[in-house]
Length: 481
Image 1 (cartoon, rainbow, N blue to C red):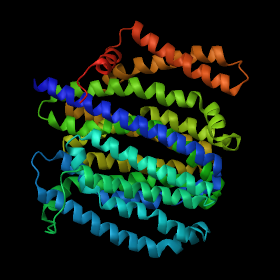
Image 2 (image 1 turned 180 degrees about the vertical axis):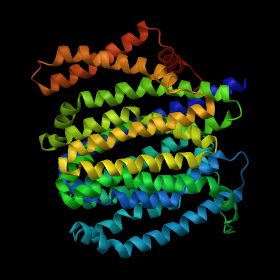
Image 3 (image 1 turned 30 degrees about the vertical axis):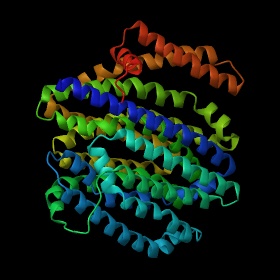
């Protein structure tokens, strides 16, 4: 019964996570296409230059406490209350600090418009700080359905606002207000859906118990965000806003697919893995099933987006964005394997190994920064190729420690994922043979999607794939309440 209960909880989490992120990406796609046709690369570049500051501020506010709370076997109101007040007070102090530092940011990029723009963009993490504890509660209790509703409602209202502002001539201001509004609406809805609410009894003592674990995640996330946004800084400083815009567009469209997969898996991975941490064999089986499910979804979706990248960009947002295609394709190759990082990281955290996660993240990040330094003279795309290749070095480091914890070898991981990768590439190869001489972008786009999808499903069915069969059976079932 316990095994079935865990299986049902995982299935429901993945189902609602898939619904949430699927709808989220559909709405993001619609709003993204409309905005990209109205705005230009420089508008997106202006927002992209500020991404690193917002990302670091959000990491400081989160400080690893969400994962620390999810990892606790026993918890109390005081734990959540301490996290809430820490986030609120830190959010206010950080916003004040960045408010007064905004002229220096503008001077660094030589863009005086960034003074006012940054002060609006930074409202996003200030609003978000008020709802972090509620988010932690929803996450720990695997309330994926409620999180789905929050995300979709916030995305629709903020997206409509962004489009209306762009149509009214507000250019990058529309993007800034849209992001701040999304954070504000999300926070309000987290308060509504979460049964936990704070009290005025401010006591930070419970944070001490979580600090050893969360501090490692804090430093890891800071370093990760710096690394993840370093290209926007370099391009904004040494190139121009247009180049940042092309980079940002390529990364944005990849992120939609990768977020769909990563968020769906992340919404259940740590809470579920934490429930079986005392039974290594059972945890191994759970992880391997997630590895196969991730490969089943990630490879056709992410590599498929790279496969139709040129057609997708030109048809959806216009010829002016064609320079973003190589960025999109490179990011999609990385994004196809990114779910492995998510799963391995969650496993390390369920075993309390946030220190190992921290050092792997920092080591990988330092290697990436080093490769950027050496590749900078060769241009943006060669630099990005080298930068993303170091990600796989980090995966190997994680895989080593995963083997140490639950005896899952790299060979076993490859056995789990290579069949799905092979089927994906075979489907694309035969589709490419059929579509390579088609001149029409629209026809080529349609043929590539329909034919490759049909081939992938057909091969899965013929090979009697267990993951494929279980997905079909679950979708037909009635236990999705």
